[in-house]
Length: 214
Length: 214
DNA sequence: ACATTGGTATCACAGGTGTGATAGAAAGGT
DNA sequence: ACCTTTCTATCACACCTGTGATACCAATGT
Image (tube, rainbow over all chains, first blue to last red; front, side, top):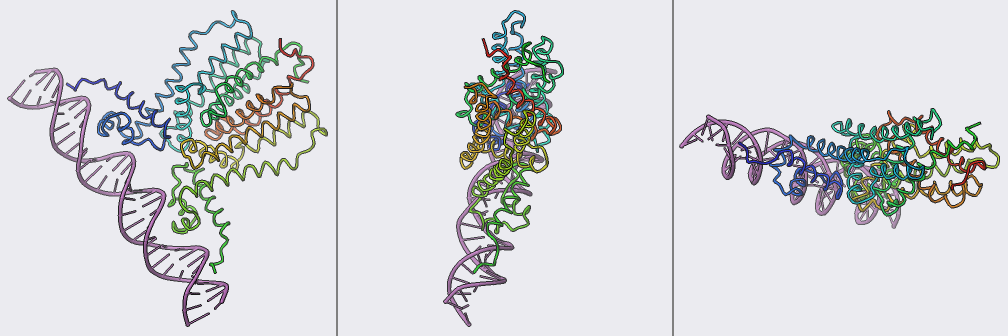
């Protein structure tokens, strides 16, 4: 009956226009009209696929989050078992894995930047708050999975997985924040080096030669 | 000749209204009219003290940055010399000092939140970019001062002050970011604990018992 | 007394926003 | 042929924005 167009594909295309626009000119520059222009559609068409601006924003933020988590999941599937790797190789692999979250190339930079804009906007936009909480918790649970795994392998002393997960999550978000806002200062090289150093520093504590605490 | 009003005070009051408004409703909610309403003035009065919206925004961001740096400076002046303190006391003092940057109470939360909004807005607003760079570099140079001091006191191995400063800056900004956007998750207690743990972990490396690297 | 200056208050305008309503066109099903 | 549904395309409206222009008020200097 319709004019034979893939509705889901159209929605994704429009959301892509939102992301492109938000990455280039910032979230405030995203309006129904600017999105229509960016996607080469008429504003009426945009409104046909989305109930309004709220739906459009929600969908765009949702699809950004989903894209990042999908990339992480696919990366996770092709990880080598830690038991087969040397400590250095394991740290390298972990660094590469977590670097998927950081703005290290144009594509990831665009995603991270837009996500930062969405997260900040979500502070006062009730339509986006649950998505923002999901994203912020995502970083934390990801970090938590890693510190838990390290605890199981006795690379981390027991009882600190919680705190170390918060620390890793803050470091990841901080690197993302700084690198997204000023990539010339916090370069991809700096990001990688900092992340690598942090992961390396975590397992240092477990050195049997080092005194535990007191 | 005038009507006997302190112009600088008025400008500060208006900037305060901007900050209050930005903290409560977000930067996009800051307009000349909303600022006038928030400060109890007429829009004409606001425009008399500022050339336009650009000047107003610049001034408001500038005054936020200045306020934070002023608080840090005053705190720095009343620091105890490290030589007089035990390692634990030194770490506590350092934690308290750096905590001045974090949104641990209502006042600091408002400042940090507004600053985050300004920093993100500055990515596409050329009027604010230099201020944003100044703020981001501020965190880094502060962190650098600390890692340099630790290096001098042999609490850090030589050659890592650079990297560790970037790591500390990212951690601080990450904590600020997460805590500003979701204070219920990243609570003040978590912030303090993470910061404390990080500072403690820095000096662990210098333990003579631990093997340097290879 | 008078002009000047600083401050307050409005009006009006052009531009942008989301959205309700409506109409046309195109491709199926019957 | 006709109707239905999907999609595209406009128009119009109310609202908000920054800003130029203008007027009015009050106090001070001369």
